[in-house]
Image 1 (cartoon, rainbow, N blue to C red):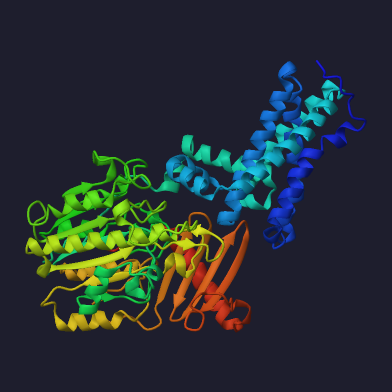
Image 2 (image 1 turned 180 degrees about the vertical axis):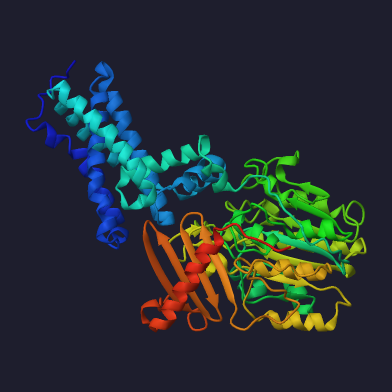
Length: 607
């Protein structure tokens, strides 16, 4: 059936129009990245045009068979392509890369959070682009359908065979450097890899790491707890948004009062070792710089099995949804996560921190009895920073970046900490409890063109708070040492050996490949290496030594190096790499390559 339109005179040329449009658009939009590729990698892009063309030819053949519904079918396909393009390039402009398997899995696993992000990011420009693309694609696809009609059946079958062959070849190669290919293969095969991981591949277990964690404690020497310990783990909180660290807004009045009285020590140069919760918290609890969780004991495994202390873990975050609870729930007398509670979800698949605070504070002195190690993990400060009416301390001006909501949730969290301390005081536990506060990672708000975390290892994502409350009577020599270390570079890896010492346990002689932590109750080594990693949206490592910070980023087959002097350039705006002496560059490369090998290996411990 035809609509009376004469077939185009040059059918093969007409059928190049849609793939040419897609390829040229992709080249223009991603040119700042593509121009950095060497020829061996860049050649993937022009070769991709073959796959673009074959894909469109197969789609056009199918559309040609839709009969009287042909125009509706063409419109549906044009709209679908437009939606995928707008979404993929929206992701590119937000995160700096096209959607990869991690992003697709996150969209599936955290659909509510993803939809909230899309709603807050979408505006009229996206609608205009969608309508314009749909219109142009409809016209070009319609002409392509007319063009394929006179093509002999044999030629169509040859095209189908070539498409199948090309799909096999691209499937085996795109995964190594997906963003060096053009839009269609990069997007289609990223989706395919993500679904393959979820449904068939063992990569799914490795990606999440959410298999039941095993641990072996060869050293069973007993220890005696000197103090109770509480570890507060915040979510996405960065130092620069806290008034205790100099922020202009009074976001942390309770902490300000603790620090002002000398009861809390603020660590000024503290950083996280990873920019995602799934890596930073296990590093914090294990003291090991590794993204593997195969056979790694956490601090409460030692405390529960080697002392008489009880262990508790309370989190308002959802952990059973992706079986993350299998990673954390070992050696715990009590383990509570969002999924085990009857309360309704409040913020990003978690329950309201305020509700959990009310429940946990009632347990001090009753269900939670000394000696103890208690982990309490917050969630409200995660995107989308849900704020309740009474908690709006700061005026809302319609700031689209979300900073005002974010800082209100930090203020609300500070008020919850005040309630925790009040409960400890009323139960008689405050004078025998050491309190640690850390955040899993920071958060970006457009400082470098993107928001959230997972993207870079710059200060907005890794400069996080750590403070310690010391009760009256805490040994003066230990307090003095901690105070000295507040001005030194520290990281989450220092928590494990510090807690081990507080619970009277011999420091574990960790495998030196992965252990970069040191007890904060002892002098820290001069010019120590503080490692940081990002293994989520991109593959990037950093080594911080004194005021120097070296970064190595692997992005689609290209390695990029950066170097910053944080003493002179705290905001990391001037990349000094090209001006470094050759010896310093070589030493930095060697350190970064070593970190790259260490972080993905399974650690070995002589414990």
